Structure formats: C-alpha cells, structure tokens
Amino acid sequence: MFGDTLATRVAERESQIVLGLDPDPAALWPGRAGEPAQGSPAERAGEAVLGHCRALIDATADACVAVKLQLACFERLGTAGWSTLEAVAAHARGLGLLVIADGKRGDIPVSAAAYAQALLGGIETSFGAVPGLRADLLTVNPLMGTDAIEPFVAAARSAGAGVLVLVRTSNTGAADVEDLELRGGGAVWERVATIVGALGASAVGEAGLSDVGAVMGATEPRHLLRARELMGNATFLLPGVGAQGGRVEDLAPAFAPGRAGGLITASRSIANAHVQNGGEPAAAARAEAERLRERAWAL
Amino acid sequence: MFGDTLATRVAERESQIVLGLDPDPAALWPGRAGEPAQGSPAERAGEAVLGHCRALIDATADACVAVKLQLACFERLGTAGWSTLEAVAAHARGLGLLVIADGKRGDIPVSAAAYAQALLGGIETSFGAVPGLRADLLTVNPLMGTDAIEPFVAAARSAGAGVLVLVRTSNTGAADVEDLELRGGGAVWERVATIVGALGASAVGEAGLSDVGAVMGATEPRHLLRARELMGNATFLLPGVGAQGGRVEDLAPAFAPGRAGGLITASRSIANAHVQNGGEPAAAARAEAERLRERAWAL
Image (tube, rainbow over all chains, first blue to last red; front, side, top):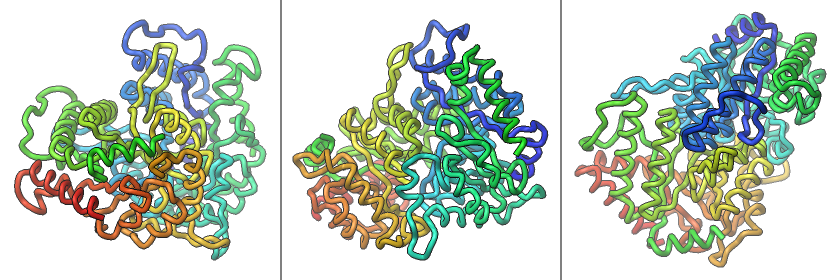
C-alpha cells in the first residue's frame, strides 16, 4: 500500500517537504566546479543542470522527504534532458528521497498506460526490459475523465507507487475551468475531487491514506477544508508556498489524516533563498528547507 | 499566420489526413530489415521503432498532410525514445509533412513556457542553442485555464506554429468532466471552446483560420456543429476515426471554414490495415490512408 510507504517515509524523515526541481539553464547556482568543456550545447547544458540539481539535493535532502521533478524543464534539453532527468532521479533516490514525476500527463487509456510505463516501471520489449523513471508518485491531469486516470492508478498500484491528480491548482487560471460552478451544485474541481476519492477508496492503508492523492494549490487554503471532506484519505501535494504566495500556516486541514496527509512543495523559494536572504546558495537553501520543515511539522 | 500555412499545405497536398504514430515495440511491422544487433534494450527498441515509423511514413506520406507523434509512446523508451522522436519528426519533415507533437501538456505559465521550448524552437543557453522538436502544431490541455494555455500560444505564434487545445475528446471518460453541465448553461467543453475562440481571434489569416485549434473527437459528431459555432476560425483535429468508431462522413461541419478546417487523424486503422484487409503492411496502409484522403476531400 503506497499510503503506508509514504506515511513511514514521512515519519522516518520527520519531513513533509518536497524539493521542487525546475532547473533553468540561465539560472543555475553560480560557482559550481566541473562544468563540462565539451559535448553539444544540449549535453553541456544537461551536465550543468545535473550538477545544479545534485548540489541542491545534497544541500537540502536532510530537511526533505521527496523531490518533485518538473519534466518540462528537462524535456526542453531534448535527449540530453531526458538523460539528465534519469540521473537526477537516481541521485535523489540514492539519498533516500521519494521521487515525484511532475508531468501532469493525461490521455486516452492506451496512451495513459504508455505514459505510466515511461514514468514508472518501464516496458518489456523483445530486445529486453527498458527501465522507466521509477517514480514514486506522478501528477496526472483529469480533464479527460476517469478512463484517462485509471491506467495511471493501475500501473502505480502494481508498482507500489501513487498518483497525484490535479484537483485545484495554484495558478490564477484555475478560476477559468476548475472553479466553474456546475448545474447540479459544486464546482468542477469538487467533481474531480469526488472522482479522486472514489478511485482511491479500495486502496487505503493502515495509516489512513490511499494511493490516489490530489494536487491542491496552497494559494487557496479556503478550499482545503472542502477538499478534505471530499477526499478523506488522499495525500495532498501542496504547491504554491513561497514564490506564489501561499503560507504554511494556512495548510493545517491538509494534515487531518496524519502528517503524510500533506506534502508541501517549494522550488524557487528554496533554490533562490540566497537571493532573498543572502549567504551561500547551498547554506541558504538548506536553511529555508529546514525552516519550512519545522513549520510544517509543528502544525 | 499559421492558419494560412496550414491552408496552403492542405491545398498543395490535397489531403486533410494526419498519420498518427503511436508505436508499440510489441506491434511493429514484421519483416523490416536492418534491426540493430547491439546497444541497450532501449537503444535497440528505439532503432526498431524508428524503422517502423519511417516505413509507415514512407508508405503513406503521399496521402497525408501531417504526422501526429504520440509522445507517450516515445517517452516510454527513455533517453533513446526521445532521440527516436526527434529522428521521426525529422524524417516526416523531410517528406514535406507537418509535425504535430501530441503531448497534451498543460501547466502553470513558467512550466508551460518550458514545454513550449521543448516542442517548438528550443532554448538559448550559455553553452549555445539547444534545438527543440520544431513541431508545427502541439496539443495542449486546458484544465488549468487561460494562463496555462497562453504561453503555448505565444511561443507557437512567434515560431510560426499552432496550438490544438483539447476541447471535447474521443474517449468514453470525456463525459466525466468535459461534458458536465454548468450552472450558467452549456457544458465545460463549450466554455473551453469559448476560451479557444478568444485566444485565436487576433491571429486569423486570409484563409479564415486562426493559430489556435481544437481537438474534437470524431466519435461524437453531434458536437461538431456546436463547436463550429463557438470556434468559427479554429482548425479541428479529429481523432477517433476508424479503431475508435468515428466515420469520415459525419465530419462535414468541421470543414465549414474550408478544407483546412479539419484534420482527420488515424493511427491504428492505418498501421494495422493489413490485419483487417490483408496484404503487405505498407501497401495496406497506403491504401487505407488514400481511402480516407479521398473520402475527406470529397466532403
């Protein structure tokens, strides 16, 4: 049961903090040694991104339970980017961190199953097994409905992993579709929350958590109470703290099922902590991650 | 103006048919020569997929205007898969076909912009320019709202490319969210259609087509008339013909703005035509693509 795996990991690490990795080749930490002098621009950029991500993970791992890899930032480096993605995931895993593949995929069932192979356990071919990214959690877009989510849930369940469905996101545009009011009452996002609750109902572990969680933007904490009513056993991934304006103090409803009921993800506020607070990037990032960890753990 | 580029290409090729490429390593065309004997399983599978896609493109290019690359099927081969994806896109482009990157991406603005870099023109880095996939069209998921779509539209517009927003998809699950009735009247998908119409309004070319199109499943042709009312200048990408049950004859409303108003995408019905109709895979695929082309052109 993934819910129990997650609860154990959160308890062991005493952290609900997720380090978001969305590396921009134009904004990597300065002063890293060993930047490659040869290879294609993509290969060199990929190596530099890998160095940056490794340094950021090494600096903050003690305060975190997981990393969240923003797939877009790796894909923009093409083939070299996918190779970098795999290396970053392996590095994080080696330090005991869970790996969240943040790709927000969603497609017809046959294609959803292919995405699940890419991000989870891979695919058997006549040439041998091709490994997948082996993520522990992956984000999924529910627009196309239940049959577009189910292949992810099935694949995650058989891999001992979990799914995080976009329910109410942290961006301004969430108002355009997710917040639309339905004729039968409630908003679109509440209907999605009901689907999430149903999909996870058959796989609730001893810790009270299922393997189907939800992305709930931390920028709209007033939604968290309602979301908890509709998804009593879902782990909430909570983006939007820090750079996007959300505050840890407002997130208490997420943790109703226990400490692993909420995972707080922060990207720029950790990676760029030195810009805000001064000091060395690694030390500033570590301090900011630890500050978030302590605040969340105290809730 | 991408709408004019598309209209010209459709007129030149006398085709509105899109070859869908969703290669499954377990179901490649038999009897292809030159399968690689060395390399990792992923590299060998990638080479085999590339050979399959090249053969399929070569067989059907004369009857098609574009290829649609299902990114999931390439991503499941990891780094080798992304390399294969780039090679397949280049091969199609070399034969005069437009390239549709079918990734159904959608994310907060900064990440949407990164996806657009990946699939369109790439990114400048201090190590040099990293090329993107250089797609002509890409599919986008609108769940997260206007600010999640706009970065794709902006990047496509500056690259001379276009965007296809998921409006009403061809899967059964489309009923779960897209078809929900809103308190103010209309369905969720109709609201998305209105957003699509507005985003494209400022970039309508002489041919009457904008650079913001819509994915409209061919399995529910009753929706096409309504969709055309809401998106008068959008090109409709029409999946679901063939294997999913849609019929070309039902698609006429899509072509109201002209022949480039609709692009009919078929994947398995072309690649597996030999299973249905007998004969060599290449000849059967060519015949099926040509049959679809003639039927659509006659509408």
